[in-house]
Amino acid sequence: MEFLSNWLLAPAGAFAVAALALFVVDAIDPESTHHAPLAIITVAGSVTAMALSGIMLLSGTAAGGVELFGGQLIVDGMSLLFTFIFGSVTALVALASIDYISDLGHKAEYYLLMLLAATGMSIMASANSLAVVFVSLELASLPSYALVAYLKHNRGSVEAGMKYFLIGALSSSILVYGISLIYATTGSLLLTDVAIETRTAAAEFPGVFGIGVLMVLGGFAFKTASVPFHFWAPEAYEGAPAPVAAFLSSASKAAGFVVAFRVFVVAFPIDVVAGSAYAIDWVLAFQILAVLTMTVGNFAAATQENVKRMLAYSSIGHAGYVLIALGALTGIGGSGAESLVLGAGMIHLLVYGFMNTGAFLFIALVEYWDIGRTFRDYNGLAKEAPLACVAMTVFLFSLAGLPVGGGFVSKYYLFAGAVGAGVWWLALVGAVNSALSLFYYSRVVKAMWLEEADEPLELESYPTALYAALLIAAVMTVALLPGLAVFDTAAFDAAATVLQG
Image (cartoon, rainbow, N blue to C red):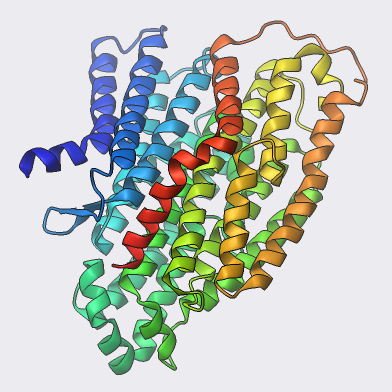
């Protein structure tokens, strides 16, 4: 059993070991200008974490869930699936960063912060205690603040990092205060123990307990950039280096959702919380958040002229789609419908990890070429970089839900799950917003392929590593259209395990 426990922790351990290796390499040669070894260590650690989690997920090694450290951590299908997402996104971003930060300093710190954030995210995926949730969330968040402000001589980057830090500190304080109220009313921080005491807490301390649930929900809403707690995301993503924006909008968002899935489904049973007149009906709250987040995110994206900022608001819209997975847990369609919609949320985040990361890596490529940031600056780009523009077209159409990538299947699962759960109107709102998103995604495609450039574009070089990361993301996005069959059973089984508590 001890060997099995160590094996189950191997994916998270791969991130931590790679981070320690970077410490050693940087200590030996801190003044080195060659950062290829740093990137190789980061990519190797991330790929190892991705491979180990994928193997254990598909082999059913942790089927049913295995508790570690007295129940503080749990390794199950959901934690392994999300660790796979963190590994894939971190590997792509680290590979792309070889070219992006080649002329910048503090390269070891850059990769180290990324690995530490990924370590925190992988622990978040396995957190089975509110204490571990908070500690791992901070481990993921603190390096992220520094990564956003990595361009130390860029005012926009530093300003974005400061805003992100201040808002993150506020959200953390809200979350930890909510946790303290939950502990005060239930007497425990373990999610399973909280679930046992929820009925008593909701009956004896309905106001305090309800406020605690609401504050925990607000803390996670900040982390996932859900409306009305979304205002930090466009600023942070626009000011951050594009690879960092890819990392935050894909991996960090997935980390926020995996914790929300586990905490609300396990710790706050739906029938108990919804049955109290004073406690918070969190399913209804997530339904409201889903509608607001989808609508505000997509309408704001449609009004942008800056492509990077458009993608930032688009990522908010996609958070709204994933919120359907929690808002549809009404119990109307039975356990089968709930497993379908919760698993669909996980599957969408898996596909989103490739297609959204790829879209931001394309932005990184454009920034590398110093072309510009507006739609008009992209005019005629396909003539100079056709392969990269094909990849970007795949990302954008898959994000919109067209059948060119896995985004089509994952959205279908989400909307079908919502209909099966009796909240067809959530699926309708999602479908309307997906149609709207096609408008602003098509603007980028039109600019690249149909418009003529105001001035001839001169691309001096084609960065190999950044191109490779972009093309890998594109291939995976397309491959997941049929390839989701490999993951969907594992995702639905993982959802069923979490729903069973």
